[in-house]
Amino acid sequence: MYKGKLKRQNLSVDMAAMCDIAFLILIFFILCATPKAQRPIDVERPLASGGIYDPGEGNFKIILAQGKTMIELENRDRAKVLTKMGEKYHISFTAAELAKFNKIETVGVPMATMKQFIDGYYNVKAFMEQPGIRMDSKKNELFDWLIAARQVSKENHGYDLSMTIDADKSAMYPEIKNVINTLESQKIFKFELMHDIKHSKAAI
Image 1 (cartoon, rainbow, N blue to C red):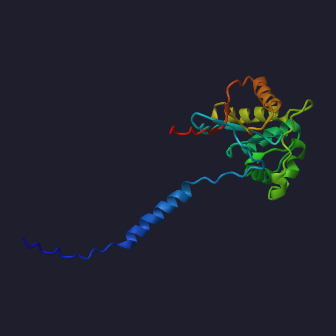
Image 2: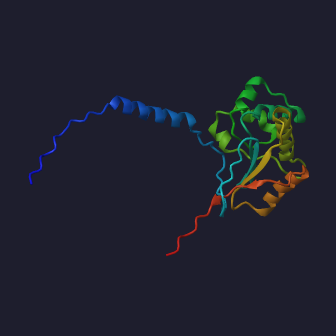
Image 3: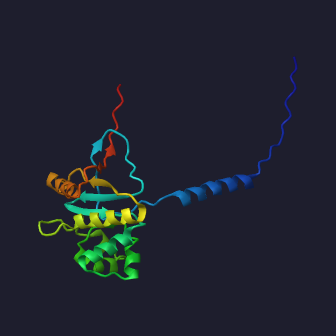
């Protein structure tokens, strides 16, 4: 039986609408994306099974790697925390210095050299060669950073900070224990240890 051929129809697609959608999606991802903060030290976290911890807002992060201790403060409170630290160490910071400090993601310098560090904020070498926060038998500045950050959080937001330790897998136990002892000295017994996910091999 004869079957007639289907008549071809010329289909036209309006590419203008497709381009508009593509650009809208691109703009959405650009505006919503958060750039990864550059750190002066690399942290190779230990592997563990379990979910990924999302600290959210109100987090105080302590970084341990290469024998150095550093901290990461939230952008909204950095300047106010530094102001409190200045009051503790009798150091006054100008509005310009506080504005610069508010842009610094990772801090790992003693308070004695903080003003020089802020003045050289745009110096990549100075940022990458931070010596670490002072934590010795004479002065434990991590203790003071904790107090200042917790006070600012309670005064401005009405709640205490959550604590996260981001330690390199090669960090020595005494270094981690020193940080934990500092937390416990302020009656902080709950904190998170960051890790990378260990993927199990599929059985053959």
